[in-house]
Length: 271
Image (cartoon, rainbow, N blue to C red; front, top):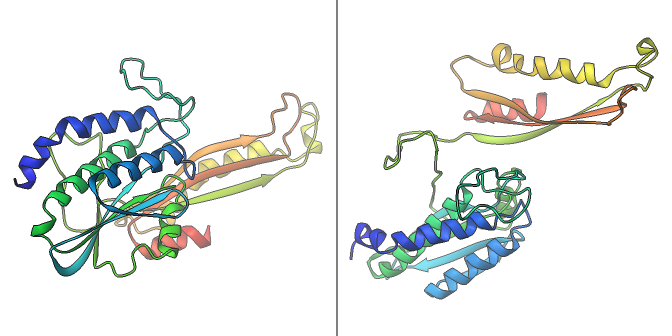
């Protein structure tokens, strides 16, 4: 059988796996059940499994002949989001956690790719490493896997990501980078406490934080070449919850995205 025929063979299974993982999402570094299920599925196939980076999993398929080492990678963590979709039978069973970024699909796709490659291994010249990466959502898992040598000896690596804005049945495959490098930032704004009735005696951390929020976008619009794609997204604001007084501290957290390593460096260290 060829790849297309094997894909049809496993169509129902990939759907079932995706729904199972969607029902049982786990946040970054807590992918305990997810990791165990991936390990179980790989071992059922007959694939050698290595545990790495806390909850990460690496499977290895050796071809009939020696050759290059190619890695296939999927991320596996979910987001701390409450799923509001009541119309599906496989809605998340974990309160406040949801596979909102498609990692449930990525896991399932790589597991089925593993099955297909295992059946075709006698036609392979080289080795395939199957990398299931934890903690992608908090931009930590990849570095830990690299530090533990997961890509040592790998000649090439391929990843895939679903994209809800793309038509069903279409694949986007183009020259150059398709998804940007991501980094996180955290800004702590320290104020001076005062009662809301006497604002002149304090320093309002909320007002200062609001100014930062509104001005963060000028980093992109005024500091970066307009021909270079870059994004600054603020995703979280937390402050002390006091109705009639100034808060002493506000914490802003967000992410930056870019394709150019020089821009990424500037985002990471200069702002």
